[in-house]
Length: 142
Image 1 (cartoon, rainbow, N blue to C red):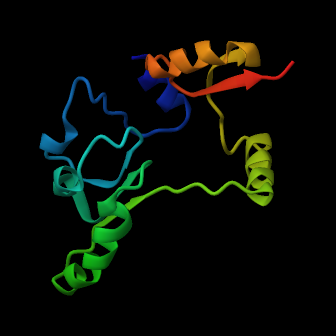
Image 2 (cartoon, rainbow, N blue to C red; image 1 turned 135 degrees about the horizontal axis):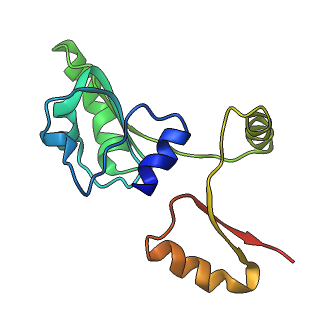
């Protein structure tokens, strides 16, 4: 329930608790499924995407990076216009300045679940590996 409250405070219209409900077996259709944990296959998710829906993961796979982009033009000939892709972050000074401005204007709300001193990096790693993190974990340099 903590995650639901957090996501609603960030502006999410709907939150699905994967531990309680398998959305891929439901009847509702989605424009976008953003799979942060990247624990689904496109074949499972595509069934509940709208005709132009997008399935986005955080981790590049052979299917999202190579296979789907190669096959997609052929599928579009038959009217299949769903998209399977991944988010690939390339940080740059320019991007960080834009993010800084978006945060300052309240357009993006960063979520920090814990802060550890640099000397406590092992504890920070254990915290993340133990799946206790609901946001970013920050190491501070003293």
